[in-house]
Figure: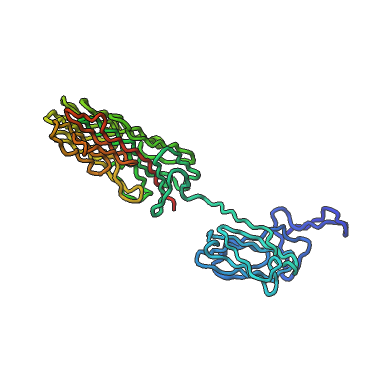
Length: 441
């Protein structure tokens, strides 16, 4: 039974009537009225009755409107001074399917006897009936949409989308800045390809340049076809991002005769620059090794240096002395450089669809040829994946070509002959690339 007690003096009757003790509800009898209590500017939210179709609101109540299935109307009740009604966007779909607010009869909303429309995502409003001149006044309008972020948000590089994924491609130095992480930890594991710059070819019967190191890990959250070098099964290759900035390094290709490529870096992953091809020496080591050149027998440079798993590259091809001292091909991500004789092709690269379409990366450069005057040889073939450069020969009409830019291809080896040696006719290495992909919808 409720407790009634008088414990203070009021202005008129000399006493204050206190209804109910602490924790006791006070209910007015059927037909009873109240004055002086008023409302405190709040409503009773009807959480047990989500609205999905046209309805009529009641004074003192707040509603959650679900317009995901289509637009509908909330009819306001007949208003008297002090009445209050609220409504909120339940599914954040007001911007697609609007909620119409209709006044009762000739009553007004903000001085206008016409319906109003809520069309902002995540919008919530509170109406108070003031008087017959202005009618219902919107006293609180929140357009903020504060929700748990289900996916990563990030900036940096060239941003594209593929299906439900976002892709950031860095063709030069930059920053991958994660502004929000996903609420599901599995979606914070990103996919990536990190390709270093390819090595330049050697000059004068030079070896082909080795491809830049190639490293890839495919997150299970991103559906694309990865290369055979996917490193997901090795835990040390997995990158789970946080809300932080990740500096990106994209390695340049070797730019001069017998110069190696430069590394590319994303977070804890470093791909080593491709080893340069040589002239009269063994090839340089690197992500993939450079091809060797004559005249003495020489071996191609070692790949996967320093070693990682899966291997980031393969060795360059050997030189076996012969009439024309042909150089070995540079190593590629998918295979060794070819050995001589004859002039050798670069090692095969590898392909991945991380960018949204199948693309070849990290092929080795073809070896060059050295022939006696009057006996020009054909060029060493380029990498089978098409990213390594072609080797040249003694004929000035056949020149070495460069590795493909932003694919990490090795440069082709230079040619020459006894009477007209070409001082530096080798191809330069192709620059690298860093690609990051994650689920975003």
